[in-house]
Length: 142
Ligand code: AMP
Ligand code: ZN
Image 1 (cartoon, rainbow, N blue to C red):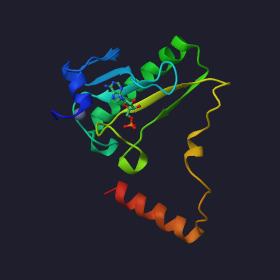
Image 2: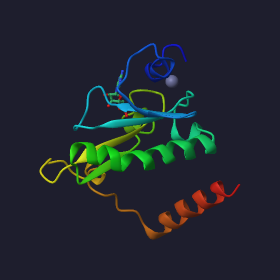
Image 3: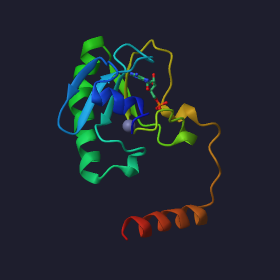
């Protein structure tokens, strides 16, 4: 993907503050960080969404996230982190190359949990919840 920023980072055509890379994944500091140490973990190959990654690549990405969380937090003295994907444009994904955000969190940072993205919780009837669970379970086991 010639016009993908993250593919260009992987190719070395755009500079990045790389903190880790292996055969299939790369991690670098976010250029416009939400907090000191804000790090992105990406698959080296271009996949737009989480579900587009082959399962092995998805596993590699999570292994890199797992490897990096403690070093990222320790580097900036954070007590925790928000670890998340914006998956799809509707969810706020701006760069169409799957990436996991590791955002260090601090007691005094004034930010909120991921739940705060959403407004009032929808009132979903038990029947509908049963249907949704059934649909997901059927689809995932196909
Ligand atoms: P998202 O909204 O989940 O697609 O997040 C994209 C992230 O990529 C944002 O946090 C940007 O600050 C970050 N970003 C965009 N361009 C670069 C770049 N060249 N190097 C590092 N981070 C970048
Ligand atoms: Zn890409």
